[in-house]
Image (cartoon, rainbow, N blue to C red; front, side, top):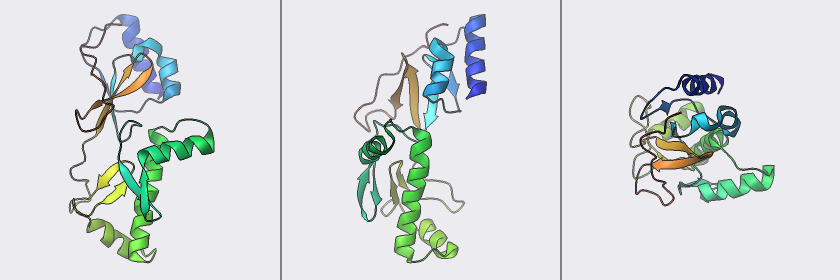
Length: 174
């Protein structure tokens, strides 16, 4: 949000010359509008992007990222963003845990989640999840996106999904 906008506008004002700029804070469409051209070329880690074709489950049936996008647009009249997708995916995972555990008992839900493996993961619109003994996700790299001419483009991982855009490198000067 605001600190990112301030940083980008400040770099633009003083003419910082950099080949790369990454941002750990998400930037939604409003932040992009506020930052303007200063956001061009900035890389952002992300858990979700509309171009990624992950398939989760909902009510015991496949429910893909594209299904989520269509349902969200139908309900709210606008495209979803990462801040909409993350809580939905969390609910997908909890629904799977409750359905299999047959209860809302915290211990049984936690045990089911902890027992997930690469072969039998929690399936969400953010991808498949299983965790190590500390509860950290395994085999789950972040997506990398880049603001390119006013659009948030999906640039990494390469070759894993259709719709990956070329990385703009080096970042254009301000």
